[in-house]
Image (cartoon, rainbow, N blue to C red; front, side, top):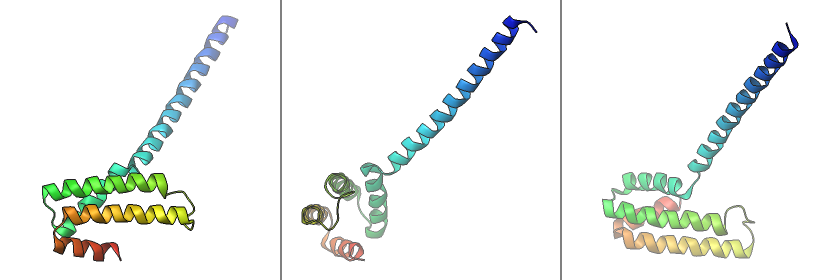
Length: 124
């Protein structure tokens, strides 16, 4: 084998190895993105809305209102509550405020019977 052929083979091996590493890296990036998408406020709110819709027999308008309320709650929880010291007065006040906002939104969206059932479900 000549020196030129040996260098060509080395370059081909390097390119193949580099391509393999890049493909593996892209696979893990995709997995991370999918995991992050699962925890997005919209996905969480959609899952909760589907459960509530089944339990409370929500209309289409009610589903939209509940979804919007839950997205707001999830966004605000991520901003003010999640990942912070749960025992701090500031976080407890923020959590209470967000829970009150959600309760007000749910009261507007649901009938009295649905609201009472939702309250009993959320207290469990």
